[in-house]
View 1 (cartoon, rainbow, N blue to C red):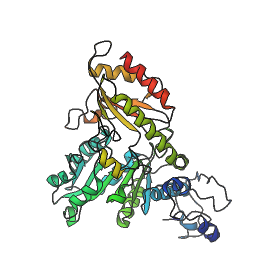
View 2 (cartoon, rainbow, N blue to C red):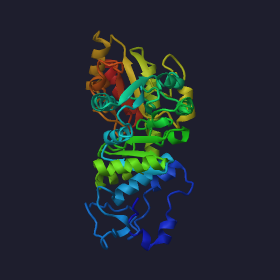
View 3 (cartoon, rainbow, N blue to C red):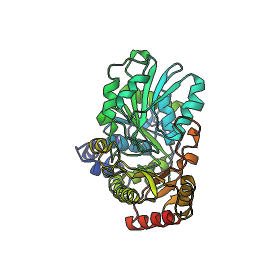
View 4 (cartoon, one colour):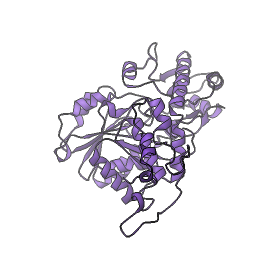
Length: 418
C-alpha cells in the first residue's frame, strides 16, 4: 500500500508516532491512525480532498500515490486505525457497510456455498438471495447461536465462507466465534480449503469484542454505526490478517470502485477518538434500560446479552462475559398485548415507536443519540416471508449516550400510553 506524503522526509517523526506501542484499546482509539501530520505537525491530520496526485515522472508516482480511487492518505489512516483496533494487519475501507458486505461476498465464486447465521441484517439476506443466488452462489442458513457445532450440518465440499453476526441483528443472539472456528477446523470446502470465517462486528465494535482474537479470518463493520458514532456519514471497513485476502479485497476495492470519500473517512476517524468512552456509556444505558423493561409486566420479552438472571435472562450471558468486553448498547424487546387500550402486541409496538421523544424513530444504530425502530417493516423488511422473518411486534433500541434517567422516563411514558 502507498505511504502517506511526507513519510520519507521525516523518518524520526514517523517512528516517534508509530501506531503499535502495546497500548490498550482505549488509547489506540485516540491515537491509532491519528498521528500528527508529517508535513506540518498538525495534531488533527488534514483531509486530502483530491482526486489525483502529481507524479515525479513516468512510472514514478510520489510516495506511491497515483489516483484517489486506488488510494487516499485520509482513507489509509482510517484503514490503519480500524485494523489496529481490531488487532488485524490490514484494513480496507469502502463506501458503506453494504459495499463492504458485497466485496467480501465477491470472494465466493459461482458454484460456491456460503453458510450464514440465521439472524442477520435484512440487507445481507437481500444481497445473498436476490443478487448472488441468481449468479450461482448458494446461501445456507443455520442457527449458530444455539450450538456452534450446528455449522457442521450444512458444510459441504463447496463451502467457501461461514458468515455471521454476533450479537445478531435484531434478536441479539450470540455466536461463539472460537466454537465455530473449532467446528470447521478440519473441514475442506471450496478448492479444498477450510472455509473462511467472516464476522460482522457492527453491533459490537472493537471496543466490545475483537473477532480476530477468537479465530475469525475477516471482520467487518458498517462504520456508519458505532465507529463513526454521530449519524453523519456512511462508510464500511474490513479487517483481516490474511495477506492474500487483503490483496484480493484491495484489488476489488480498486476494480469495482466502491470507495469512500476522504471527508467521510475523516468523520469516522474523528468518531473513533471517542469510541471507547462512548461504548462504556452505550452499554451502561442499555443495561439500565434492559433491567427496566425486564421489570415491567406489560413487556413479553427482553433481549439483552447483559441480563444474567430473572425470566428475561439472556441464555448466552456467560458467553457474553467471556467473549465481549461489555454486553453492548443494543436492546430488543416485545411488548405484551393489552395495555391501557387493549391493543395487540403489534399495535402497542407501533404506538411505542411513534410516541417516544428522545428515542428517535429511525433506521441505523450506534450514534450518540438513541434510536427506536420496528425491524419487521424497517431494517428487516427484506426477510418477510422467509425463515428469517422477524416478529412483527419486536422493537429494537439503539441506546445513546443521553442521561439514562431521561431515556427511562421517555420509554416509561411511551409504554404507559400504549
